[in-house]
Structures are given as C-alpha cells and as structure tokens.
Image (tube, rainbow, N blue to C red; front, side, top):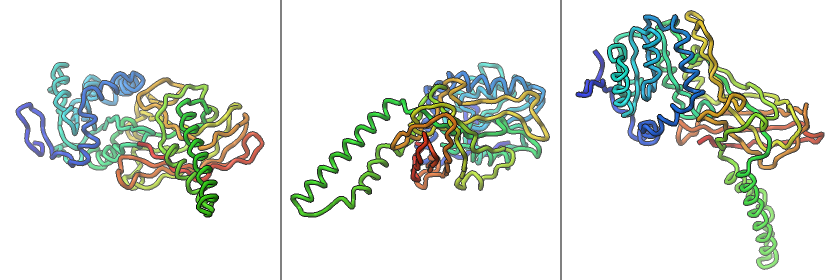
Length: 372
C-alpha cells in the first residue's frame, strides 16, 4: 500500500522530483561513477558500517528508513544488523541498481526500494530509526539535511533515533602553502599594477584623476580571485589552530533553524608559528542514537585532516593577504553561513577576523565566500 505505481521492475515510484532541481542536483547522483567515488571513501563507509553493525541491538526487529539510499549499502547493513523492515528511499534512477544489488544479496524480503523524494512517499508505518548519508561539502552544502529533518518530523516514531545523531563544524587556521593560491595572488597583483598604469595614463592623457575608483577595483578583483572557497585535502601540519564552532543535535534542530543564517563567534588560538593563508573548515558527525534509544556503541565520522582523506576534503577560505602568526596568538572570528538566494543547495560563508598576530594588529574585513 504505497502511493504511486509499482513498475514492472518492482520499484514503487513516488511523484518525480521537480525538473530544475532534478537536472542540477539529482542527476549527478544517478551515475554509478559518482556512487563509486563515495563508496571508495573507506573512512566514510567504515564508520557507517561500524555505527550500524556494532549497534545491532538497537536495529534488531526495528523498522528503518534510509534516506537518499544510493546503491542501498546502508540499507543492506541495517537488514544484516537485524532490522525487520527497511525502506530504501532514493530519488534517482540509482534506485534500479539498488534493487538489483539488494536482490543479489538476498535481502529483497526485508528491504523495499522506493524511487522518489522522501517528502512524497506514503509509508503505512513509521520508523524506529532513520539512517542517511546526507552530509555535503562543509556539511551543509546541498541541504539534504532538510529532507532528513522533514522525515524525522513525519516518518519517525516519537523517541526514534537518527543515524548520525549529531553534527558539528570545525574551523581552523591554515598555513599559506597552497601553490594554486600563489598563482591567483600573482594574477591579482598583475591586474592591480595594470590598473595603476591605467590611472597614471588617465591623469596624463585625459586629465582625469581616476584613483578614487582604485579601492572599488581592488575589491572587484578580490571577489573574482578569492571569493570561491576551494575544496582541498589538507595535511595535519598545515593546520595551526582549530576550534569546534557550531554543533547540532539532529533530534531537536528544526527546519527553520536550518533555513536561517547560522552565526558563530569564536577565538582561534594558534598552535604554532607560520604564515596564515586562510581559514579551513570541516565537519564531524556522531552516531549516538537518541535519548530514548541511545546507541550501545557511539561512533564518530570525522573529515578532519588528522583522520585522513575523505571525498569531502576541507573547505579553504583564502585570505587576500596572508599574515604572519606566532604560537599563542589569538584571532577573533565572526562567521555567518547562509543559503544562496539563487540556489538554496549552495551556501555562502561570510568571515571577519581580527586580533594581534605576530605582535601586529590584524584586521580582515567582512569577506564573502561561495561554497559551490
């Protein structure tokens, strides 16, 4: 008894996702190649496997929903951990492959694959547990968490558990050693010199002083060269100070909270001497279960450089001008994360920073970055 028609392939179809969103977002995940990129991320996979299999007591005889199931591997683990029924919900054509995979692994009786968006699926029962791998770049890009929270509010029993249960963002100061950035700086400086030449020419030939526009031109260049955050795989020695700055309990966070701008004020204490080239951000998620149904074994999935390389990497927000720092220095940072107006799956991050660094006052004006 589901909404929508069960096709010849035995997949229950809900209403198709919105065309534009489908073209931009869902299509990328409909390719096996993209799925493989995520599946070869062993840090990601092993922590999920551990979170499910080591908590088989929590999964035994339970009803489980897997949101954004992809190839259905999390659903397979949930079934193997003893779940009585698993609903694998996947919006893309990947649902076809998930069904084949689940069948080939002998679990078709336990796992029902549903192709469609979670918001449009009509299940006849509520779940005890929701599992999902929803995390995007810098945690919140792609905003799939909205769907998970919607499912929590509509498809989960009271006191049910989310896996993962908690999420947090960590920010760090990073050493200025990325070569690509040097190239951008050189081009930026070349463009500034070219402008200076133009201003001199205008003064001489046109008898007009254009220098009043220099600052605006410099800002425009800075925007062009520096305002998109870069996804890098940093190494631990590139980090010179870090701090947990935002944290969410996924059992209590609301859709409103997620849609609002998120603001954090924090201090970064430098753990070494060096040249700070920018700030970097990453995330961790915890699998602790809920208050009413806690996990028997807590697991953490971290995308920190200290743990190793994951397909998420870290987001690097480069400073326009790198600055010297000494061990023990403190930078005060104000960070705002907001959704882009034109595409709410993408996010903007605004950063401001000041402090006394290497005995000199330092101020980074409010700077906007896109996480795309």
